[in-house]
Image (tube, rainbow over all chains, first blue to last red; front, side, top):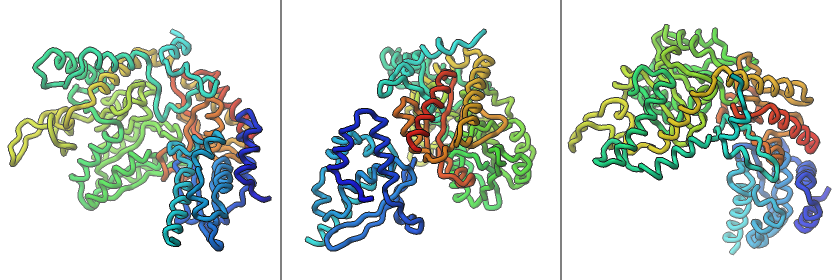
Length: 140
Length: 405
């Protein structure tokens, strides 16, 4: 299944009005996110959170950055799908220009980006942004 | 005397809180306990009426603050049955208390000496000794646990030799809830002439502690796990040991004479308490200890056992749930795994229902590695929890299971 776009996610999530439906949707996104091959889950790709772990692999196709991400927790996987909608297969300038805080706020998911949650999501977003920034600088 | 849990709850203002419109069910007591109003008041009152530095002021406020601060030390000394008030050293918590001992022993030990800990330690009771070993050339030995999560006492004993200089173990495991036979372990360690430190962080809030009866050399605990404030704790140690122990931090308060070339250390307890102490914290902790020690300990233990029994029975009957840590002697902690749900998912979905638990490795990574799991979901109970709250946990877990299915 194709991963949803940011607009689709915004549409879907505003449609639900109780937390259960919203998180059931996030969990389903998590289940649909393609799994990262076990062999790729190496310490170099690991972003360790104190509650759950996240792995990230970065690739490039033409001027677009490709990310492969995974987590051991399904809600984090769902949130990663939300992040991927914004960042995957985008150019570095699209990535750095994207207002991720505003996006998470409009989805009412901003507390997952708080560093206190210990789920590694904040670090992943920061890492993606710095990779995009670095490739912009290199290209410029 | 019956144990009126509802009356007890009323003393804890935070328990009236709601989370997303649902009543807070606070089951993270092994991380920190909530504070009764009298503890909160004691801190506010100190700052409102007699805030000043202790021991050295030439004025009324300093006298009053010193009285309350040293009075708190008396309260704690009495509570744990210390032989003398000087044996009670204020620290920032259990971690600093263990560091005072491990830092000192790092200066005393030599190559060939051994320190023994157990497989169920919190990081504070591993890394401290591991680093002391690295500094001194001593070796760290780890006593194994059995499949139930109990210490293998025979294997523990087999590790003890004339080379064993220090033995450290928890009174209660923070991640499994296992109660250790601390008197028996202490006796065995003392038989080979080792010093013994008991990590009381998880044990102190579950009943009376008598350090002389245990027979250990050091006992460490935190105020915040005993209904007191954070940032304050206690190292208790035998006066004969502490008065000769390598000093911890240096500076003011801990000296008796200072020249540019040298300094003489102060007497106990001050020689191990450099700088201005956490006065408000000590006063709050003293009040917490006073409050706690006035409870009916027999009724309290019976209530905690009822909570634990109900939680265990419901967990056993819950499809797809595995209890991690099934020691025969256990208190306060239900660690578990659930099929189809990572602990972080369970923790999050419980939080959305107003239920606070902890998830992860519980600062016990080596133990989680030993058990072959990344971590657990942990519900931990205290005296103000109710049987209804235990039921609420399992109702909420049903919803979690449904949502993750």
